[in-house]
Image (cartoon, rainbow over all chains, first blue to last red):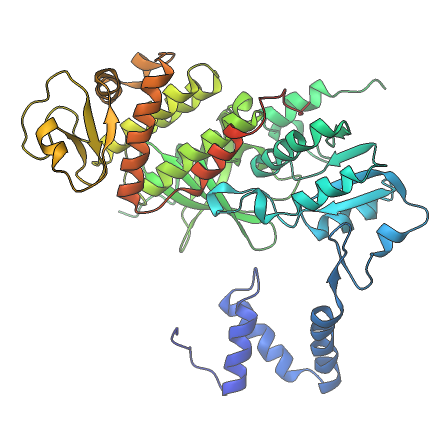
Length: 203
Length: 262
């Protein structure tokens, strides 16, 4: 066990330690949050505790798209207006939130829950790739959009999944890569810039 | 005199780890500072000026600001993106294997211009997509050699007698080739090596990257060398590299398809 730093009381030290385990929370932030929680009205603290318990107790993975949901199948998979001929494959459940915010995409999703990362020991078997293939074999899907992140691991994952989907005869697409809105041309790297030029559109 | 608080260097990005909201910790391999761990702030945001320049397997010039624990990247500019390599799954899996090997065999901040040249030379060789297996073997031999784990290829590792031109066995546990007599009584498992495979290993150990680029060897010879080197690397590291497993998985899969990008 690691040496615990000085804390005013045992429960305080314990909470600091638990918060410190969260991603992006360093020891100082964990302390600050803990002392904030100590001063917080009991009702607010209870609501926070209940919310944490609720996500653990009431959230499941959708048996179709593997998005996190309270009902199985999730509202997106069971939505009457969704286009069932398209599946958008994403790395994380958060990516679904980002894509839904655009309001442009009306198809279904498939969450891989990660990305192939050989150096970090994550291979294809750790991801929900097999269930995706089973879904596609079920028929009815005409297009799969591979919306993994446009970085080395995301691209490698997409290429790997594409190789597996290709024999099924489903159209596979990838979102366009190019210049970000509000960005600056001079700072763009050569890969982004050359893809932006290659994918240019008539005005 | 106070040390300068910023420095410039070039490096190949070996790996990355997410940090906080939008940052990453990168492992760079540089010629003048060896393996370097740096923080790239905001690099996961789409509008980041650094983002595309600091992808794994990119050779970039970086300007780095010294920090309290880890240094921070201020600016980055791509020197070579190895784009054709990263758009081909088989090649990228091999590139990741090279990066994983370098990361496993080097310690932080121990500079090696020779190893850097071997890395960028091998990546360029891989990207050319001709002699891919040769590029991997060359890299493995050189990495072992430069980092001091090079196998003994001229004399028998047991009795030190000079090897005559005849087939021998490679023993990872002993650290090189055993002559016929010592091979017969060896405790560790022996990997058979033909004369040509031994010659290939010696040739790769001796020559700088510029002299071997594009070199083509018969596949049987390459396969023997691959077995010997894989055995040696696994013995030195005392583990299998996950990236090697992925590389083999991809290589065993369906024939290469045209990249889906663009």
